[in-house]
Image 1 (cartoon, rainbow, N blue to C red):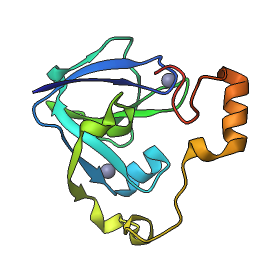
Image 2 (cartoon, rainbow, N blue to C red):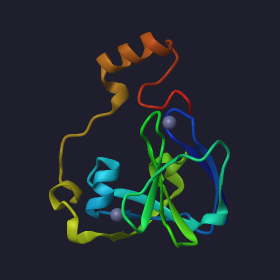
Image 3 (spheres, helix red, strand yellow):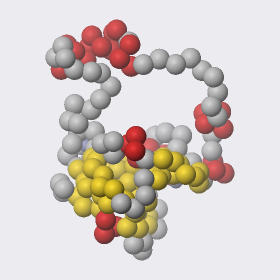
Amino acid sequence: MIILQGGCQCGRHRYTARLQKPEGYFCHCRMCQKAFGNIFATFINLPVADVRWDTPEPAWYASSRIARRGFCATCGTPLAFHYLDGDYMDLAVGSLDEPDCIRPTDHTGVESRLAGWCEPVALPESRIDDNARIRERWQAAYGPDTEPGRPPSA
Ligand SMILES: [Zn+2]
Ligand SMILES: [Zn+2]
């Protein structure tokens, strides 16, 4: 069992969660693609009772008649998914303070998977902190000892 903390990009919503195993999954369904503005969502699944909101709960959007999605109405971060009648819910892996500790175990919603974006194709790689222009802008805004590409609230 591990204790995880996380929250949205601006820090308005924070949670503490208890997870039995450090495992998560990909969802490629069209609803998740829309909700995340991305080609897939990544989640950990855990009992509702094992999630504690340390701040007020996020806003909830009824994404369908059977489920709702938690998000921050200030910064827009997608945070959670919950079937209305479910004892379990999901938290978005990217909203964790240390997403590195979660290992992906499976894919769902694969009928909508965008193969061209998901296959490990050999594309050029770069680091955000190697981009001089971004580094310059970030450090002018946050100070010379800060690193670009990390939420200022974390
Ligand atoms: Zn926020
Ligand atoms: Zn989905």
